Length: 132
Length: 77
Image (tube, rainbow over all chains, first blue to last red):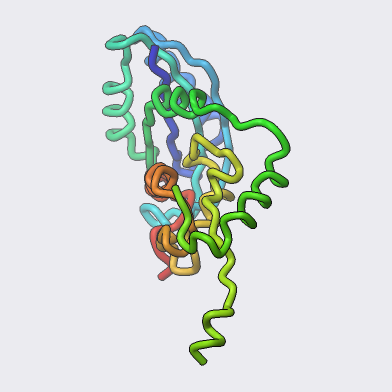
């Protein structure tokens, strides 16, 4: 099972309802390709950090997708997004491996801050450059 | 002067992600990433921020992803 995040930025001149229908279109494509939509977020209008195509704002949409290996329509979805000039940017990120790795790392329990401070004091001056 | 320097106390830098136990660095977490992009929007080097190598790598990746989506700038003119 693989999980992905697909984020895209829509031209702000596109109406909100239009954005919703676009979202629905892509979601349909994805589910038709054999993947599941596990979540979605509509961030709405947001200022861009730099202008893209002379536009200073964008509407951000985020889809969480999970799919079995080899059963995705993501390449086609990306292709369609590339062609769609109302989409300023898109990014697909595969997240399962990184999240798994993060989950495996044992979360050290106990009072974190106090413990850390003690560690710091003990190593201070003894080793000027710290261990990893 | 040389003696004065010896007494100078340098605070030991700690990797923020190790300290806060952030294992997955999310490119969407603009607030977090912004702490590592100073004025000119360059990625803050490890030697300054104290981030460990294991966390600097995903941090760099996250910053680059966020830049692509115009969440954070590449540069400030």
